[in-house]
Length: 186
Image (cartoon, rainbow, N blue to C red; front, side):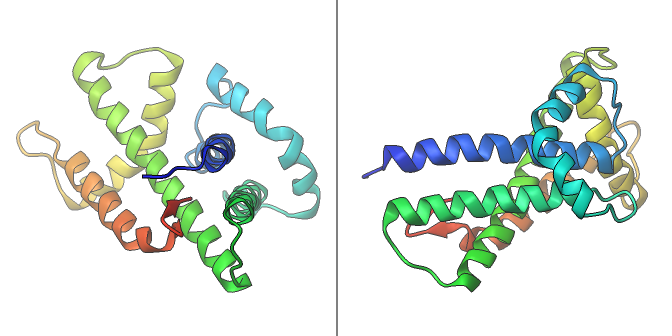
């Protein structure tokens, strides 16, 4: 199958930065530890673009709208560059659909990997004090709590990760038709 190396390069660079911006958004939503060294690195990587946006775009409650706008802008740039490299023309509505669907898909992907890391850490290093483990625990804790309200533990066996994985996979399958441009996933 033919693959364009420029599209791959654009996707890797843009999606990596999108991941960092989405991680900052999630860290603020979950009120994760700001003094965690990983959190500090994420803040330093995103502040040059988020701080000017915050002057124009106020936060809405706990939602950092500047981070959300930046995430959408990064995804829009990704879509624009892929379309430019592919040499096709799409409508403004298609740009909006690809941007929103791609951002949501990557947010779900972030939670999928955080959940997977959380499950593995619960097996090999429960209660680990590593900054990464603590951050993953803080990100996934709201999902666990929400799911455990509906599905109680069965004799010490927590089934909530299974249902969270199913929900994430279901939502990603619903979004997946809207994240491909000419056979290339954004």
